[in-house]
Length: 146
Image 1 (tube, rainbow, N blue to C red):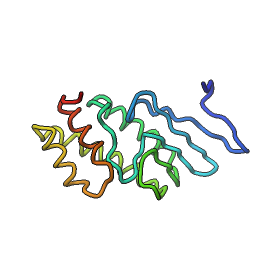
Image 2 (cartoon, rainbow, N blue to C red; image 1 turned 180 degrees about the horizontal axis):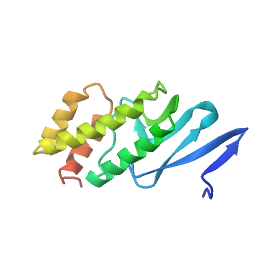
Image 3 (tube, rainbow, N blue to C red; image 1 turned 60 degrees about the horizontal axis):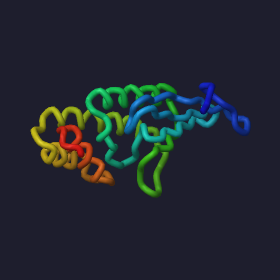
């Protein structure tokens, strides 16, 4: 257990960012100011459908708040928790993840079934990997998760 909000390693300060609920409870990110780097863990995704199945409406709002905490440090590079095998570390993934969650919320409100939500999200994000995550998220959002 870490008893402080930062620690030093090889001359670099590492600051812990409590991101709260993202794709699960009690997640964190780490910011290295000297490198402009955020290790975002499960808070930020790269071209991958985020796992929203554990995040109801309240959880998705908490996730957006966690994303805001990461964005507030204005990183120049972001190592994401989920993405392609050859990822880039572009901070644009922060805004892309935020927008995905907002789109999911909007389309969830406009969809009657999990299938409709799934299809509509795939239409907006056809090139993202791991559609199984979207399938589980759509089912959870419509109260069909097992």
